[in-house]
Image (tube, rainbow, N blue to C red):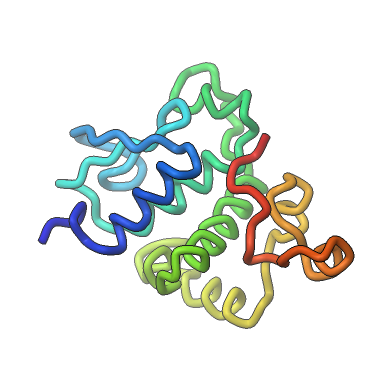
Length: 167
């Protein structure tokens, strides 16, 4: 079975299609993450060079937390040299956790030992205990609700998302 045929990757690809993030299969030689690159509201995947399929969700998180008008600039020389900011990185990490929860995939799928500057176990520990680093940022972006606001609005709190893409 190839990476593309794995149950986890199929779930991720279907989810991304449903929320409006295009995935384009493409061969390329080098990128920041092996087998992955970002373009204008899309993710390029080179399945032959993809080392960690969970990284697809993290990269999708970067697109998801980027404002709509800027998403189309990703992968071009028109995107800010500051992109992604540290706040964007934190938001993308937490977004990918919510996606894992939604897809019922194990945390290790995204937070594998070879990622996150050796902090994968730390993220898993924090998220598993309900310590959602960056939650106020995702709330501010209008993507989810913390416990207090969710209770007031009678909606599901994070890790449930109110929407998956930032306006």
